[in-house]
Length: 355
Image 1 (cartoon, helix red, strand yellow):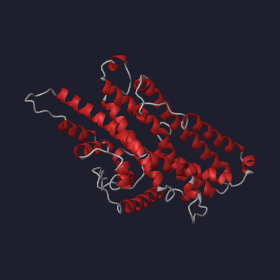
Image 2 (cartoon, helix red, strand yellow):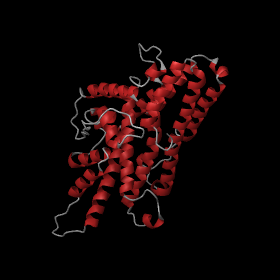
Image 3 (cartoon, helix red, strand yellow):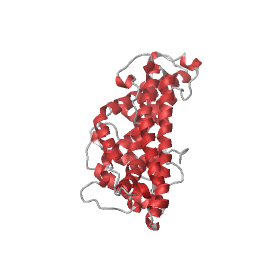
Image 4 (cartoon, one colour):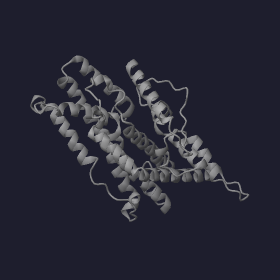
């Protein structure tokens, strides 16, 4: 825990100092809590903790490139920012202000709340979609760098021991895309929750307007698209998994020496290709507006399968790490260091059910 605290603090301070040099004219300013302490917890950090420790310092306060992906301004931007911090109370308060009417009548609290919830759900979905579409080029570059293991090919890089992987190997272009995927995922989930559509019932679907159907369908489609992005840009995949693959592939004889590890690595590759980088169905995000693009059951099932596959893939990588520590790294210090770093990354980035 002491090691993980130092590594996290070092990474955060490094990335904060870099981001503070850039200037942004955007209304998106997600200020982290100054009182947060850099300590790992046995469970996934809360939303505020995540943004305070490293996510907010990466792009939300002052990274002009990522800020520009959004189009909301003024109160709308402040409202969406509150959702990203997990402050739904603040977001709904702003939404009530924005949806207030001056017709001289006093609507019931239920009517006021529903109007605010619908407005907030629509805005979260729209801003998530806009940011996703505007970030296509940089997102593809970040994914390419993550998948290729480019962090270990930078000029001047020498072989490092597994225990030193906790810091300085998460490229900014990769971590930025992870941070934004996490943020957009929160917006989409908030949009779905605000509409009360976590589970689909025929009687509820019949009450939805065409606009509400489009908002929900778009949110589920985006959640399905974000699942492989978040997986491929997290440190479990682009640092740990890439490191082991790189070390293993340096000697062709390792295939015969470590057949179990090789089989697990092949299993991970097949699972990724079959479930997470396969052909995606076209929907509202792609400009297609037909019956299937508004079929909520279809998009919810597809999104759930993709998110489950991403979680399952982390389990397969854990098998690879375990086998590598047991057989591939013969020096006890290196095997122990690999497991220590894996424990740090999995505590922060892996879903609780798979962890």
